[in-house]
Length: 168
Image (cartoon, rainbow, N blue to C red; front, top):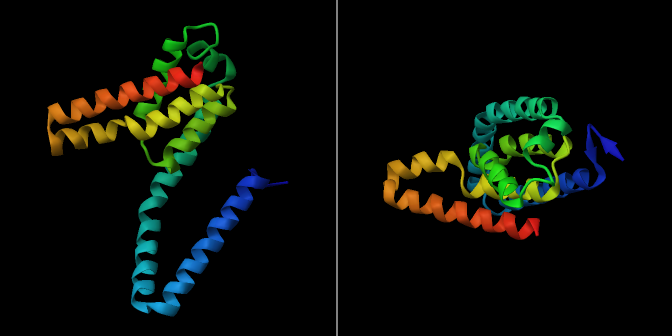
């Protein structure tokens, strides 16, 4: 069964999340109405701040689906190329995506639907949340070049190891 492009498992996972959220808010309303009111107001504000990234994600994801054909994907990440080169390519692509799943997941899904193999997708997902360029600049400001540079180096090595293990 498919509804608005969602498959059965995706529909059920969304339903389960909705039911859990409903019961959490219901329990807050019954036991602490002040926390309930504060949570509702914060959720509405959060919705306003997330609408722009969500719209951007939809457009970026659709663009990725249309720009990157199977032929282009196979040009950069292909089976006859060395595994290390594929890992490096997917880490670089994943690293430049923002860590917010509402933005990065539609983009990565575009690669997946264009024919990128599972190890490459896993590597991109890991790199998106571990390396991430936005954290790089914030880290330089807060912690300085040495600590942030070390964090990025260790993260990059960790993602590379993950990719190499997964590709084997």
